[in-house]
Image (cartoon, rainbow, N blue to C red; front, top):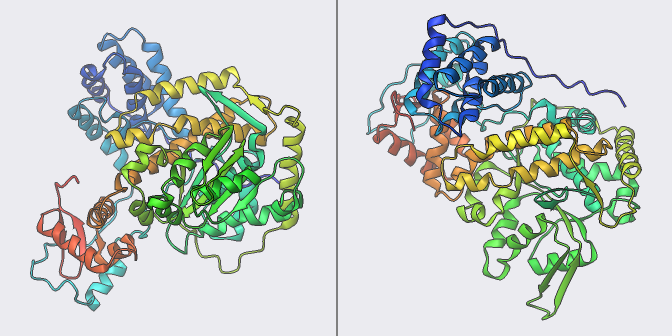
Length: 566
């Protein structure tokens, strides 16, 4: 197999300089924002802001150390380490604390001062963008009038970003070893984004491993994942990416095809989940199963019905891989038992459908925070994609099979326990201390974060086992932590829309888009999606205008009103 030609992350410039007065002013502003118990987190956040603004690392180190001395901090060495950590993460394309990470940790006025001090440096790196002037629209405007020729010309010439939500690609470090080869094989064959291939391939490898391997972090954790692919209808190719992993790849290695009962890791495919009783009955015969849901909405909505309300609670239990699952059938009047079940879920949905289907209760119950969300938009048009090279696909499956069976033979019915190397132990401890002081906007967000550490361990096991490692190495854990950090950046934002009514979700979507710049109202309609009637979108835009949240011009351009922070 050839090596993956995936691009590496672009390093930060790190070539901008502050004056001595500016450095002193930043350090002095932090004296009252250096609380004992949160100093490490504050140092990470300040360093992250400086790194993202392009400030030289040595200058950032001097600023943070100066602030520590002025604040009477007796651990300036640790603060210097925090600077190095933040700069290394930014250089590697990994998530790093910054402005958002400091919210709730330091006074608002201090954060605003830091942001203002660094804004000129950021502006020097970002090209200016001209946008059409936007004027207030009279309240008696005909909201359903067709677009005028002038408006159509402005629409084409003005600053209009793609209408789909923002999805940053996963950090490059997540495409590690076998997963880089998988991406290189599948990416040319479809317009699906790399994020979808990553999520599907991680779920595939986890399903193939089953109970053969595990690790412990308070509780026993097996590599069972609940992967949710999120993107717009059609163009994102969600089901295509899922099918590449769970239909194409098994066909390339018949020993793993469910109907042929292979030796070694195996799984059955379940496409329709009608009730918790049917699930347990299925698992009693097929304990290792992949639940393949082209639309998550069907399962979630069934879980809302009184007669099938135990579906989601059972899925919550199965994520933990219990030794035994019992359920009394309402229809047959007898108990069904599944011994040592292992369930992987791969599902897809759109952002708006997810927001409509999920609720605060799904977070409180623990279902929402067990999901690993992989968001993305379709790539550029690919009118003549090549077919999947089935020989290479078979080679990849053979490589994985041979690696797993050689490193973790099924002699022990309890499976192979992965422990961490000392470097990985230290890396996770540092991440956890940082995670422990993460600020959260509300209890809902705090609840969504609860299983990030557990999912990181599951992912680390998958990365380690795919490479045949004897222990979870630092690189395995780094990839896992980078992935849960990337997932969290998106999940924490989207979860705020869960359970909102239609008008509230439309308003939140429009406000988020307008923070990036003006857009035409037709673009906003497309962004909201076909699931919500146009009249509701028009009503919300009108209410936002009347509420002085937005400005509009006669041809339909919409912009956030200056001074509005929502």
